View 1 (tube, helix red, strand yellow):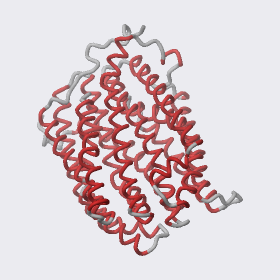
View 2: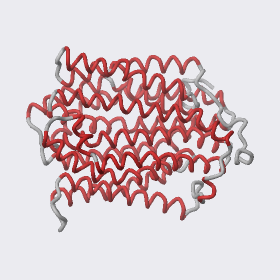
View 3: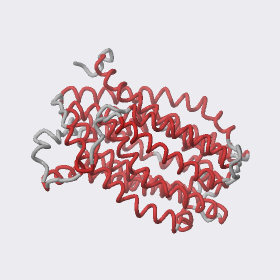
View 4: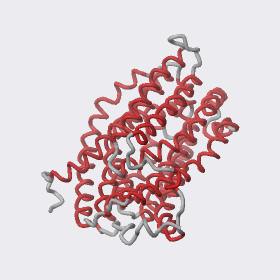
Length: 460
């Protein structure tokens, strides 16, 4: 078997069977944000900036959840590769417990101290007022997100990626309807403005979670576990579990804080810069949704292969996936330049902000290849192979050692506009890509975490 054998049907079957539902779900999730921002965008730049700043707490929290569930999915995928259902369900229980525990402080901060969070990123009084009212409502959805994320991510590890896809689709459609109805007071609903967008998000998340659990337990799928199957962990199992998972959690935590600090520097540049970043983050996410799905799919496939003892195949598929990701990234960078500006017509922004957005699109396109390559390497290959400590070092080190100093240089020293500051910050992506590819070629990333694990004896 060769790396460049792209006619390998098994490779495409494994990646696409797992990846297509994830790709579509990511597209729906990012469309969720796009619809929110388009409808809120009709209220003006201040409202766009308010939602963007308020969502920074949600962003950090969701990355906490992603770290927990991405880490636990390493075990789910490898346990499922050896068809150990008990191991899969015990891992699900741990991810649920960790996610719900983490949700508590975030929910309390969002409800009772939203102004303090918004004040970190903006000194515009109206942005602070609107952002705080939005955050206080959205924070109520955090515990619900913990449940949805656990079941959704672990569903991918056992080959049920279509279940979270169905739930996300229903949630997206409901959110789009409620957004329009509650923001502008349509169909007999009250005109709530930005708070309507927050309420629409909360209600749609409740429905999405209900659908996800309903499908799983009604059909008695692999994750339809009883509460008793979530308990009874031995010390040996917990040690085996947390050794690779904790680096992923801390990885996402410190990465999220580092990347969120960029918003502080954008805020120094003014509300127009904040609105530009918020709009382009949403537009760019639509274009990289497929590659995010590829990363998750490769992680699940590699984990399954390692668990099944096919380590040589896992190494070949990892290298092949890196080439596929870079090729499509190159193609999509041109698509972003050609199509990206057309999205700006959906937002009620002035000419200066529009021009900033158009220039920022070019910056995003230039860095498309390293961005998608890094996602595949870190989330797919390194985590799928259990190489979580190394992936954490490069993923966290890049923003703190390169991105933040570059942000300070661009804003405080050079006083450059937002698109040039963003170009400086993204030098961290180039660094991560070079280091990640070196790790891939070395072959040191592959670790079989469940080879000597027997779920029948790992219970206290």
